[in-house]
Amino acid sequence: MDERELANRVLEIVDDSAYHISARRILGIHLAIGGLRSFNVDLLHTIFRDVSVGTVAESAKLFVQVLPVRHHCQNCGTNFDASRSEAPCPACSHPHTEIVGGEELRVTNMEIDDTAA
Image (cartoon, rainbow, N blue to C red; front, side, top):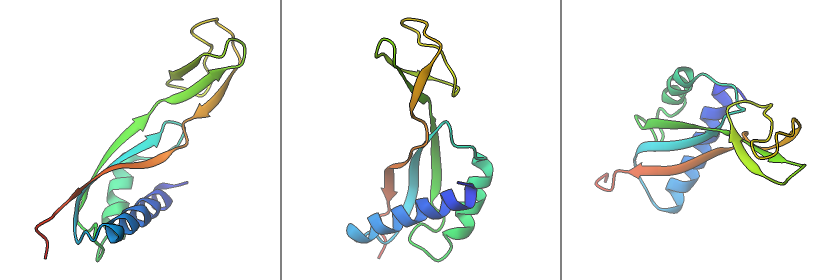
């Protein structure tokens, strides 16, 4: 998923959420994006600014948190975070672990202008 697809997906989520709570203007959007996703944060900001023109999220600020890659050790059952896609288990040093998180895209919070009329 490239930056344009990410921006469009975020706008879709925000627009749907704003509709359900009757929000007329969104001031800020907090995102949590999995560390396996390859994207440029600055480009995401630029594209989001472009795709949100004329929407409830026009001029909203994006706050992006990149989440660590989540692993599961098939040997001992330990779950752990790592900064890369291949990492040995910190509990048993087993070299082969399964990735169980890192592709997520979540809108974790929205700042709403409740004075918008």
